Length: 194
Picture (cartoon, rainbow, N blue to C red):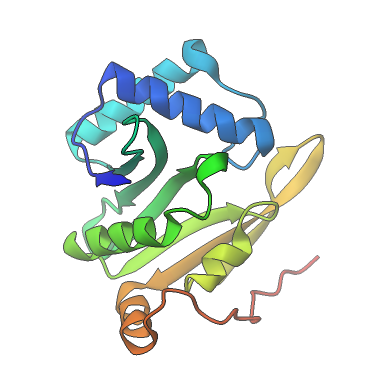
């Protein structure tokens, strides 16, 4: 696998990212859309994404297969724009091809974590749906700081969204002490009033 932080996307990159997101959308609805986007709907989204990338508003890690140079994973980092919040980076669109899950996650996590640290950030935040990989993020050291019961809707029902954070220094210290990125799960989630 090859890990890259491009400053712009080619037409080929955008098409591969659409194919990647579509492959995930077929199996789950955790990306915010219910069905594959396809090129017609996906290209305007990816062109806006590319514009943000070129402006430096976001950074994107792409993971390419060495054999065919195809994008098989991606994650976006968006640093908070306000001066008082520049120590925070939001992790978005963490997408791994269904046939590649379990093959490069921890190495990709290391890449994203080191990039966030190199950006001068101290805290990583992310949002994950109740039907998404919440337990995985908790195993990587994230803790919940909020919850929205009607975060998204799928098949006519409300889906809860969880807001998570991790302190980069704590994650790095854990890795240094244990030799693994994985943490024991925490069970102190935020209580939500019904």
